[in-house]
Amino acid sequence: QVELVESGGGLVQAGGSLRLSCAASGTISSINPMGWYRQAPGKQREWVTVIATGITNVADSVKGRFTISRDDAKNTVYLQMSSLKPEDTAVYYCYVNLYGSAHWGQGTQVTVSS
Image 1: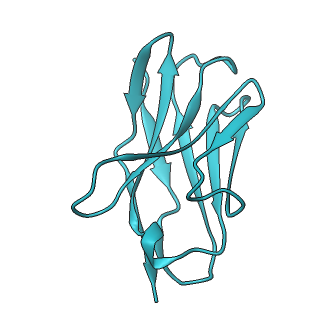
Image 2: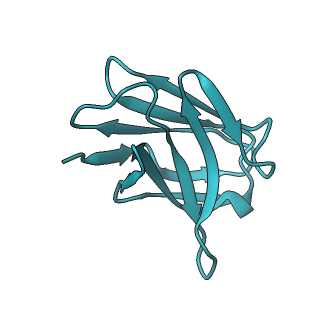
């Protein structure tokens, strides 16, 4: 069983930065995609970014502002968020796709004030 624990959320002013972390327990390979979704109040969950075997993909809405990275030795994925906007306010969830089975963290709140 895989458990994901996010940390690093909080309140930040517009234009600021935050770094989210997601530590996974269990056996995870670099080929297993890890990434982030987010869900704003009243909206559907939105895919943000993913990384696998060093290849990354990022949603257009955050491209150039958010960077995903991964430390496979620590089973940890990071989300560096810069130039934050109020519309980035959401609960951020990390996930890992283990051979077709998705596992989710509990989420961490990010609030960007204007």
